[in-house]
Length: 436
Ligand code: HSE
Image (cartoon, rainbow, N blue to C red; front, side, top):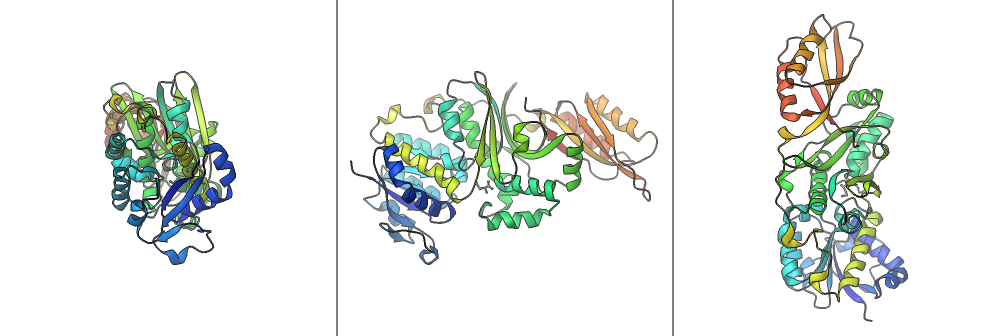
C-alpha cells in the first residue's frame, strides 16, 4: 500500500525529534501501522538552523501555509506552538479534509471545542497525545484503557520544568532562577517560562485531562491556577520535616455539586509513589471506580519523548484512515453529543486540608488566639510545630496542618489571623492532599 504522506509544521525541539524517530524506526513503525509514513514536506521558521537533521525527501519551506495547502499532504503535524497561527493552520487543514496531529496543549485547551467540532463535521481526526505529559500515553490510557470506569479524580505532576525546579530546590538548595535557566537550556521550558512556573502550562494540560476523564467540554478559563514562584525553601524544609513533599499538581475531581479543576502547589505524603517523581519527569494518578488507582509515569517533555507520542498518534491516524468516522474513538473520549455541562466548583467551595506557616511573636496567648479563630470557623488542626524563636526579635515560625476544610472558611480564618498584632507577616498557605 502507498505510504501515507505527512507534512510537518515546525522543526524545533519536538519537530526534529519527530523526524529522527520516524526515520530511525521506520521499519518498526511500518510493521505496526500497516503502511509507511513518509515525511514529504516541512516548514521551519529558519531553514538555516537545521544543523545536521536529515531532511532528505522533504520539501522545505519557511511558509507553514505551503505545507498545509500541499496537495500531496494527507496528515498535518502541527508543532509550531502558540494559538493564533496554529489555530488558523489547523482549521485550514481540517477544512481541506486533512487529519491533524498536534502537541499543542494551549491550542487544544483554548480552541479544542471549536477544532473538534469542525473535525467532526469534516470526518477527520485530530490527535493530541503529545499535548499532555509528553511521552506518557496518558490520553490513550484514560480515553481507551480506562473507558469502563467512572473516573472519580486525577492528580498529576504535568509540568516538568516546575517539578525540576522544586526537586532541585529541595535536594540541592539551588536558587529558583538558576534551575529555571537550566530547564530552558535543556528545552523543557515553554517559550514564556512563566507558563511553567505560574501553572498556565499545567492548567492547559489539566483542562484536556478533565475533559476526557469526565466527558465535559474543554474549559481552560475555569481552572484555578496558582504557581510555584511563592514557594520558599523554608516551606520545602518544613514540609519534609512533617513527612510531606511539595509538588505542583493539577487536580480534577468530582465533588458534591460540581467538578474541581485546580493547579497549585500541594503537600503530599512522602510515602506516595507520586511524591517521589522527581526532576523533569511527569506522573498522573488516576482513580477509576473499577480499577482503583493507576499511576502513569515518564518523561513529560523533551525532543524524542514528545516525538514518541507524536509518532504514536500518526500511527493511530494511519490505522484509522479507512474507518467510518462515526466509529472512531471520540476526540474527547465521550461521544460529541454526550458531553455534559456539570458546573465547575468555585474555589471557596473546594475542600482540602492545608499547611499554614505563620510568623508570630513568641509570647503567651498567641497560640490560643490563633486556635480560637480556627475553632470558630470549624477548622480542625491535625498537627502544630513551632520552630525556635529568633533570639533578637523573639519571632518564631509556627507551622500547622489542618484537617479538610472548606476553602472559603480558611480564607476567612486567615484574614482574622493576619489582623492579630502578634502575627507578623502574611500567612503562607499550601493545600495538602492525601491522594487516597
Ligand atoms: N514546558 C513543558 C514542561 C513542556 O516543562 O513540562 C512539556 O509540555
